[in-house]
Image (tube, rainbow, N blue to C red; front, side, top):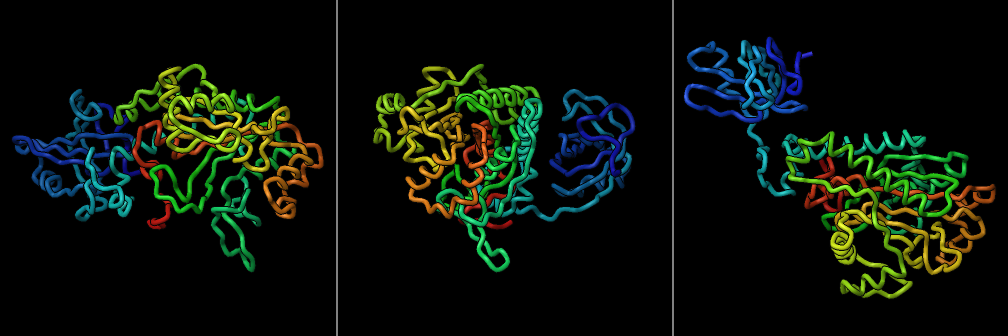
Length: 433
């Protein structure tokens, strides 16, 4: 290896470190070079009257973002990044950087489009390093919770022979001599896995939506973490699971990502329980906040979502809340309805800081109901046969949810655009890099 120590594990004595030149400055007779590796910053210090001229020249000629290896003596210094100064004995340039196309300094406000044009350089910014560390930790913590709850990780197809759900907003691709489609959501295959006798499953993977959208919260390709469980009483078992999972992960994140959250000035308030708002009573709240919708036919839009977030925060002091029992008129054929009042679906959303993070609920497991609801939605029975037929063979009551990974990251860190929470965003206008 080219190093003996990372920034996070420096200690007094001989060290060999590797990283990128993050910053360089001269103060009096001292040259400071700040290096960055994947764990943090470290300071190389050279006193002009005490250091070998060859090493001093090498340090002076370093360009920002060049990859270097430095050998020397680590000396404790509480004021230095990482708590140490490295007095160099040798400096080796591994890869010299040309003039950077964008500024990678902390806090620099280069336009988003330009940053995405040079995304691989942009990712070196400390803010971006922090964003994706938070995202990674979040996924690890969610998976740890699901593992402890007995969930099995699965992988469902990204290519489908028929369009998802209604068939709208899908990407078609050439599949040998026929047309195939990129999935909108792995929902139906998760249900077929439950039908196959797997009681608790989860998956992390991509989905695609061919929506012509230029908003700050939508992508053409996004990732989700999804869970499904069998033998539930109703959708409240799904609510309970998702609530426990989010609370577990967020509390762990507060401990494991202190520096990253601090960098963004984020303080997470994590309640012990999330409020649940239900239709049709929710129409009264919507009326109160000035949002009018047709009862039993529609729920609310983006603005209603935001205003509901403000209302819940004021009334309950929570950034999180669930919405339950949406109008079935705007839901998919596979959603279970409330038998006593079929206007409403056992369908749930999780809202965080005024934005939808997940959708889910209880699925219909009765074959006759699935067929009847597909007909009601005007769907061809032939188009759902590949899915519906398996429900003839004794499928347990089940439900689940799908959380958008980029959206959740965006809201945790109060980012203004979901593209900042995506390594290489795909949208209407961007397919490279």
